[in-house]
Each structure stands twice: as structure tokens, then as C-alpha cells.
Amino acid sequence: MRTVASTSSAFLNRIAVLPQAPVNGSRVPSLTSLFHWTDPGPWGERSYPGNCSGRLIRDLLRYFEPKTVFDPMTGSGTCREVCSELNLLCTSKDIRFGFDACDESHYDPAWTFDFVWLHPPYWRQKVYSADKRDMSTAPHLAYFLHRYRELLSNCVNVLKPGGKLAVLMGDYSDRHAGFVPLTYWTKRIAFERGLRQACTDIIRFSHGATSSHRVYRSSFIPGLHDTCMVFERPN
Image 1 (spheres, rainbow, N blue to C red):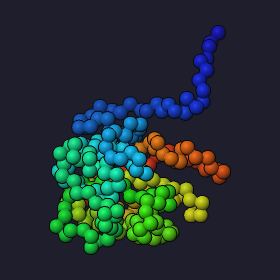
Image 2: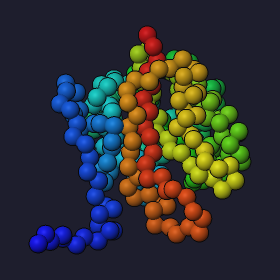
Image 3: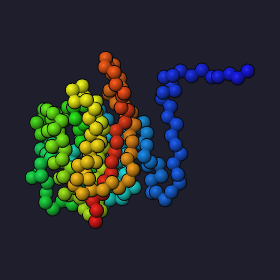
Image 4: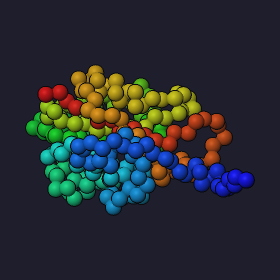
């Protein structure tokens, strides 16, 4: 007689069997298209809403090996702290300190960077301030995308030839606008600005998301990840 061990469905849902990554010459063999780490590491202020794991930023910087990094939306300072640990020069800005990343006039014409880390607000998912320039306060999708285009264009302008732009973005199901594919818009705008994709998309599992602990009356397929896209400015 065969005995089948009983395991709760809740426990099974917490287990993800990941494919084995092929051995290659990567400087960071743990960096694959699936970023699944639950421990975010010691960088940044974890209480800050929407905080990204510093492990992802660290792995990207170790892989691409830039010398200069720009973070125009510093948030809790995760990227800045990772750069400090890696002894990288990081220019860190934020709208809370008067820097509007969507306004070209706020950029120094002399700025050039090897790497730009960009983790912008996801439209209507979380409001970070009452500042009308804050992308999270955009009243409708068209205005959000207008500001997003300005943001990405400004980041492209400060990239050195061969420089990399890493953008972490998530899609969104809105009760009025329907499904909003912000990852699609990210790629569309980036390609329009002459960038090319530098590597595979990196799917980041959304461990610790506040939405995971909410109960909704509406029916939808929950999104449990966001996407890191890395673009390159051609030489």
C-alpha cells in the first residue's frame, strides 16, 4: 500500500521549486531571471513603503561593474547604501529633497553615469506624498505616462554610451482603467528613446507586499511579482 504524506495546501503554496540555472562565466551566478530571496538585507529603511531588496541592486552592480551610479528616486536610500558598501560613487536624489526627476532643468548638464537605478512609483498603487510633481499622485494614467516619459528621457540623457538603466516596475489592475501594463510602457518608452535591452527580464517575487495581507471583494488574478528591466545605451 502506498502512503501519501498529508501536507496543508497553505504550506504547499509557500514552496517554489526553481529551475536549476546553467553554469556559466557570470560574476554573479546567483543572479538569474528569477529573484526570489525573502531576506532583503540590511540596506535602506525597511519601514519605507515600496522598499526594494538591496540584494537585487547589489547583484546588478556586481554583475555590470559600473564606476558611477545615479539614483534619481532614492526613497529609503537602499541603492545609496549598497553603493557605499561596494565603494561606488552614487549620486542620490529624491523629490522629498527638492529634486524633480521628471524635470530636465533639475539635472546637471555635466552629469554622466555608467549605471542608473530607477524604482519609480507604480501608478495608483501607493501615494508617497501630496506633492503634485510626485508621480504617485498622477490623477490619471495619461498624465502618469507623460511624466514617466520625461523621467526615462532624463535618465537616458545622463547615461554614458554603453551605460545601463535598470528599471523596477510592476503592472497594476485598476478598478477604473482595467489592467495597466506598466512593464509594457516601460519597454515601449525605452525603445523609443533608442535604448536596447541588455539582458533578460528579472522577475522579482513580491515578498512582504502589503497587498498580500488584504482581503478584496472583487475577483482578480493577484500579481505576486514585479519586473526589473535592464536597458543599455548603444555606443
